[in-house]
Length: 299
Image (cartoon, rainbow, N blue to C red; front, side):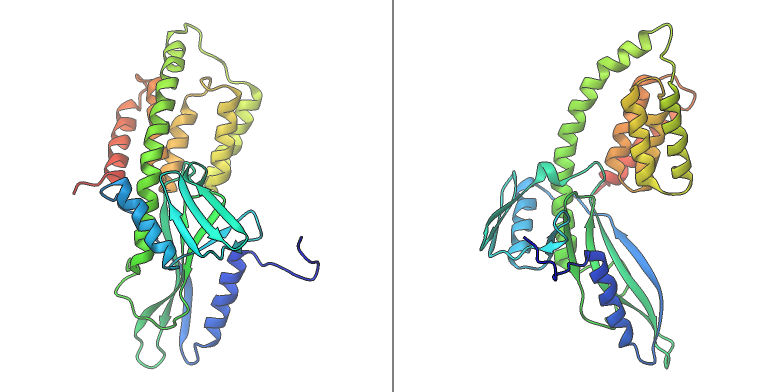
């Protein structure tokens, strides 16, 4: 049980404090606005390669892991064993199992880099000071790497130390395989729902509750508050999965805005299953082709 005198800062607060400490060392240098760069992972050649990559990175302690449900407590483990089911962390207090089935959400795995662009006051030269990378698109756990070095010159914000990029690639490969199987099963189940909807002479009418959720979701989407918009659109579908087909179209585009292209493809396919003859059906199918090219880029 946690002692009353012991406090745990959220992990992002730790990052901010670290940034403040770095800022105090700038001296005559000028530090500019915090910037973000997003790395889109690539698919590895096989699931075995992905599992071996994760095992190598975790056992080298190249990346830190915290449990977001427990005050962002960092795991201190002796060894990591990686199987097709998940990651087994062997610790002094016992074994912590991180199951892949509970790790991934609908959003695609990406690697986010937070950094400052720094200008040398004497030479005017600009360089990037990187201080935090973290994996986005997973649930319950936080995979990250903080950089303690200052003033490291990088050729561009897309340059990544190998362990960070490799971990993102490996997790993305596993997520992609699992999502593909899950989404295919869901599309097969939705096929019957869509057929029944298309056969109806009188289509379902949206309820006032459903309309409320859609109006609120649209408002949040316009404000670029995509997580809130996604949650509300899904609430609208929970009320009635076919009374408002355009919700599937809107969800697809919001997921694309968040670079979760696999989820975007899934919801756009459901939209076309419901209304294959919609006026924007051709454009919707073309969007799917574009997103598929991003998820599976030509070699």
